[in-house]
Image (cartoon, rainbow, N blue to C red; front, side, top):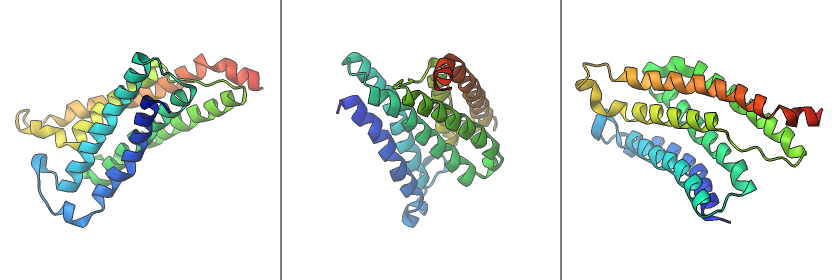
Length: 197
C-alpha cells in the first residue's frame, strides 16, 4: 500500500478518535482557549490534522507518482466522513447552529447521489475521481468548520462580535459548491449512466 493511501486511511481513523474526545467527561471539565473545553479543543485540533491529510495525500501521490485506483476511490470517501462528522458535531454541540441540519441534508443528498453514480460506474470498471469543484467545496467547508470549531479564534472581540459572519458565509459557499459539484459530477460522468442503461 502506498504512503498516500495510508494517509487517506488515517483520515478516516481519526474521525472516531475525534468523536471520543467529546465523550470523555474529565476533558469536558477543563477550560482552555477560545472558550473551549479540552474535549472541544482536542476535537478541533484533530479535525485540523485530518483536514491537512486531505492535502498531503494528494500531494504525495502526485509527487511520488503513486496515483492509484484505490486512492481515487477512497479519498472522496474519507473527505465525506470527515466533513459530515464535523457538520454533525457543529449542529449537535454549537447551539447557535442547530438549525443548520438542513445543510447536512443537502450535503448528504449530494454525497449519496455521487456515491450511487460511482457504484454504477464501478460496474463498468470505471473509477471516477473527484473533480475540481468537489475538491474546492471540501476545502471551503473545512475552512468554515475549522473557524466554527475554534469559535472563530476569538476574533469576535476584534470584530465587534461579527467574526461569525465570515465562517457563516464560507459555510454557505461550501453548501452551494456542494450542490453545484453534485450536478457537475453527474453531468461530466453522464456517459457512465448511459452505458449502464
